[in-house]
Image (cartoon, rainbow, N blue to C red; front, side, top):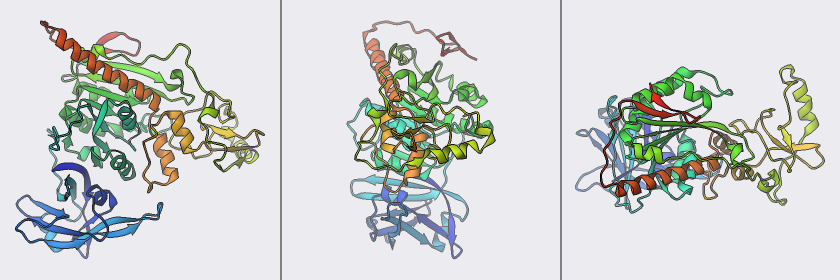
Length: 474
């Protein structure tokens, strides 16, 4: 059976008995419907508790029914499993961690609940799925995948197929399951993930809050993720790793430690700072990108996308909603009154805070975009007396998010803004994805053409800095 979804789950209790309480993430990943019968078996040999939508062959099992709850945002009923029995004590314990795995094969769905399995030294490799997939595009692993915006830009290039996403936020994982139904999603702390899907490319966007000028600056929090990230990347055997983050991330002790751990397998490194505005996008987003390659051929065939000398930059009005779409407008005078009442803000420039539809530049779209802040960009009306937030559809167009990508209806609008603000500039990611695909094709063609080659042994890890200087990873 194919592993579809995994979640690390803290076991609660009900009447002092171990309780399995699975909301719609687990139930919908298993394809369970409200009111459906589910067969439950306790297997002490595994040890595991097995729930499935079909009777067990030649074995008795308890039966429960899928319950439901009403989602506050969509108002729709969602499936829910809630069961507690003393019999579960032989497998799981209250307050202990367990892993919940969802498998699918044809009409059969199976949920396995078992004590958390974790090997600090080695990760379990999934390898090739047994569903005989014929899609042989480059396999993409996404670590700290967020809502899946970066993944969508790789997929939109038509050269990549998603095989695994790792994400801690449950509503983001809901988006991942919704948009990538054939991939494997792990929802939870990546330090608890013990499975890596064999991949061609790994896209790694670790939390930047510790390094961003808008974040908390607590770098030590990130350092705790380094070993887990290393184990997953190493086990995935990805030929190419791509890192995306704020520039200060790449000077951190954690990133340098990650390089040190990876360089024996990934001796070739290159780094590039890219400002999305330079590529013609009207929204600024200053990020640094880094690649790590296993092979010399792949490394030297990869080229960073180059910004055009004279980018064709559209005006904001190209991205705006149709005039028939209604928006909520707010008083500019009231905003300015509030702004001027705060001593710390008085000297802040508002040059890009309020713009009209003729603007060709706006500020970076961030997680807190829906707040009232001089660091955001708002649209003025023609009279310049009122302002409004850019709509989610407008921001998607500006950032180049694929039209087919959807937010799940259970995710409220304010949270969708946060998720897109935590995401990427799709225009830049698509350009990098295309260069990755080009590198793989060129490396393959060259390997076929070469009849004889003396391979140089690499005694030092090679690095190309953002300025193009060839050096070594020390």
